[in-house]
Length: 337
Image 1 (tube, rainbow, N blue to C red):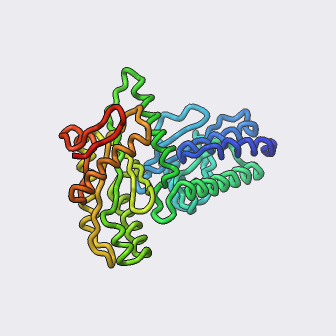
Image 2 (image 1 turned 120 degrees about the vertical axis):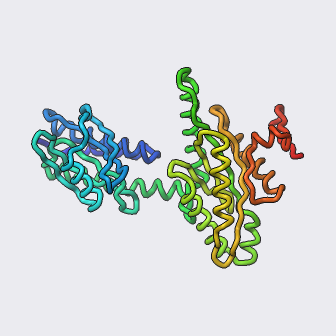
Image 3 (image 1 turned 30 degrees about the vertical axis):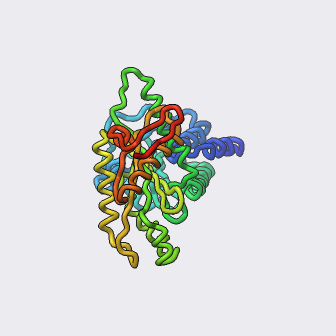
């Protein structure tokens, strides 16, 4: 048994740091660990398993396996317990039971040190040099996700930033295009892009100062994360303007979701400022839209909301349908009526 070579370790680092998406990065880490243990345990059955926590109290985990075919039976009670212990303690655990593969469990932590999932290496990892290499690779992963987080998120609010928007929206569009090309696979979910703008925010800064204004922005972003689902992508575009990308079953659903958020903002008591309202405009995303087209359409709907009473949510396609807006097909311009 030989420790991993410098070349093999550097190869794994190059592969790992080439990813930008967190889920893809996690998968790349598991693949790197699998490749790392392969030359060490050539003759043993092995795999690297990512256990993502679904419900830690109920000991429910989703499983992604790299290597040998995953076992079809459910996790044993002892395995669930050791996974829970690893997740809760943030420390490595060894697992060995009769008729089950020997596993070394490592907590996978985010940039703040919070355990997000557990990676289990189902192969004898008793070599201290290999164990040390794996631990260092996991620390590099944690540091790298911290850099990604800092690069992709707005400093004040913690939401995704404008620079990240193009990458994220293009991934959504690419997936929609892939689905639309499969004749037997219809798009049963509709995607929408919405732009939110805090009404009269300049007055808040002018009357209360920029520190209070920043507090309003922070509280507003927290209301967004509390109201919308984890899978909804939320961005701060700058100033008092925010963007959301949503997936819903129908236009009626998204209208209800956005109106619920608008009402929640209107009912919230902002310290020192009091009542604040928000206007929003949204548009349906088509598979072959350009990101600039989406922003333009949602922005026009937002502009209409701002000029027709504020504190309202307007749907671009609905405004076109009822004649409130008219689209110039040749030039792509919009006229307000």
